[in-house]
Image (cartoon, rainbow, N blue to C red; front, side, top):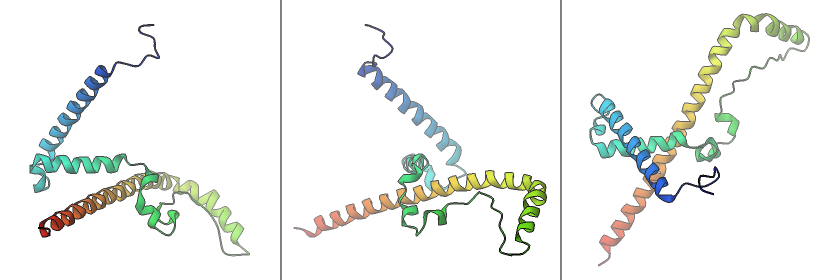
Length: 160
């Protein structure tokens, strides 16, 4: 059945799509380079260095939160994760319930705008923290790979 909806496109079409996507990505990278290189980091003037940095940061942005090593090394996952929930409690045994009632019924409605504003900022900060942790990890992996290559080159230079 030609043209059936569950039929897979021929491999040639897939290669054409991949090539087109690579050209679009390269064009977008050239545009970013033209926009960011002159006023940005001096190293960005070199298109190859810019492409390498762009690729590293892109991998960091695309990483799944659960595949980052750095949070796993921390004592507790919740220690580094921003807490955005609002909890009311009191340590006072006698007037504690009255204080919690006051906070929930009077203060919270008055301060709701601040809580909502802060929630969005917390979400953005959490995303930035995740991306930075992934970027640090990408740089650490690249550093380890380069150190291994240097050690191998030194070993070859020492051997007659």
